[in-house]
Image (tube, rainbow, N blue to C red; front, top):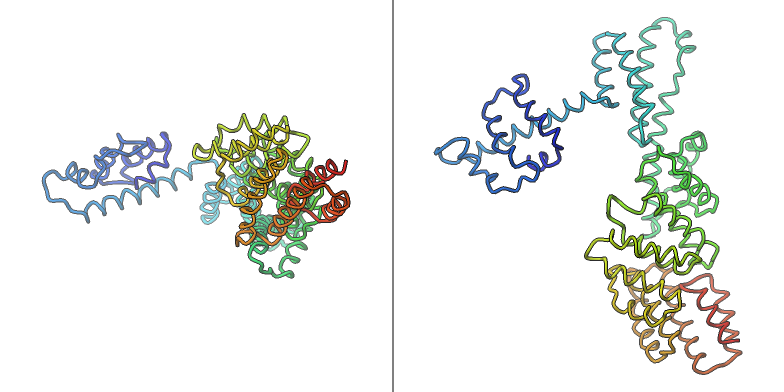
Length: 472
């Protein structure tokens, strides 16, 4: 009961007080008195006066405490709270209330009132934002009820009815709701399938794709975005990345924030995979996405900034042409990180920017102080420490670092792709360090060919630059 009251705002709490005084809803003076004892402690409800025994004494005087009586009183108050919330919702100008009022009028054959309610509901739906699954459900119900009104008017005149109303419109609204929910659920399952190596029914996925063809690129941005996320996870084809990016950067106000966040993550993940595969052009792509998310506040939920997002921007930004922008982001958004993660995340991020600016000693110092909790971030940090040792000529320390780094390869949390990339990083770094200490042009050229021919691994571009430096 207290948890429910904590969720009330000040106006709702005051309205509930008035609600309790209405004899139509409540005829128990004891409930009113009970509420008066609770009321002064809104909104925190943290006083010891709210203990059941003390409330019972205030209500019943010296009579012995009865837990069953208190439970019954609390239960009644909780039930009335639910009635209040439902009644309060019916007073609002929203789709749920409009549909309930319509059904009441129509069931009593009050056709004019039912039709007037439908017209009001249409106005509400036209201004409804965002276009989530609830929007399509209400639109479908609205279309269905509109059909009921028309059908009751044209009984026996079916041909005229067909002329007056598009019978399939409410079916399309229902299909849109189904697509929104299905794309969201199957995208989640596709992500799980990649992690846990199971296969989804390809025929079912194909049916969803076929059904979507009637609705994509018809002006509904929500369905277009969710379709492209679904297809990108299903096929990994570039056309879905660029289709999603176009809709994402348009920043259509009818798209719910949660869907924009999902779109951003899908775009980031695709770019990261391409970068791991050695496609350097996606460095600019991912920074365009990151900058858009920061500038339009899609990186923050209220005042909190996702730590993984903060670290990823630092990693990619330090490897791009946007080092100055990345540095400004790191400094200005540090305050939005949760306090317990703030300093470690900042040290991690700052170390990458300093490394990009060739301040290797300070980058190494900060990297060694950071204790980021995420497994992949720890590997990325150790890669940075190894590269800083190389740049500073600390080859003995580098050898120790690579030896310690090897234990990550057997960790079960690594995917096969990341395990291969980590093993390649360690092997190439070890060969590069040996050739720096014992120059051999032929072996360097051979190493260069190996690096160029590898599909992708961490810091591939940096290795290519270091090999060219040694060759020169």
